[in-house]
Amino acid sequence: MIDVRTAAKYLLQRYEQESGSTMDEMKLHKLLYFTQRESFVLLGKPMFLDKFEAWKYGPVMRCLRKTHWDRQVQSLSADSEYIPVLEDTLRRYAGMGSWTLSNISHGETCWQKAKDKEVGSYPVEIETSDIEYDARVIKYRRFMCPQ
Image 1 (tube, rainbow, N blue to C red):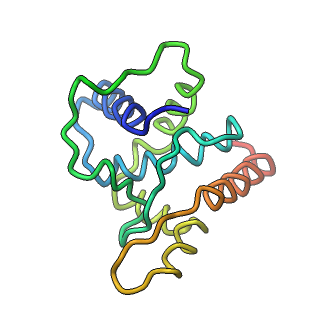
Image 2 (tube, rainbow, N blue to C red):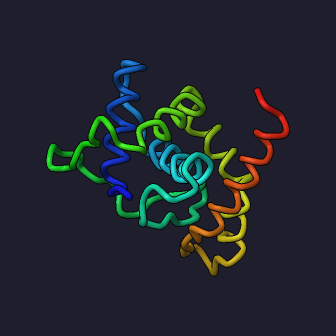
């Protein structure tokens, strides 16, 4: 597994290289969520241990809120098994807007289950096992309806 900040750094840098623009924070959180799910789909395991919270507009990685990115965050090695997962996530989702990604994330069982447990306005952790469940659903759909 890798540090979630390492995954975030990779996504931010690759997005800027490909699009020529910077990624907004909401999009980063959603892409990280889809990256974690894709890691289950493609590798059968999570990419990072950190847990998402179910916020109003979808999954959020609290430890990355308003984080100042610096060079101290480790970069991925060129042979990391996670690079294909990150690249697949970017290929599938980076072209979508933040609000579209938010809407897609609201369709995920893990987000819905966490929101159902919410009391008041306090965010609830999304269980990694629920993300794994969503990954199995996605894997099955892709198997049954290949693109």
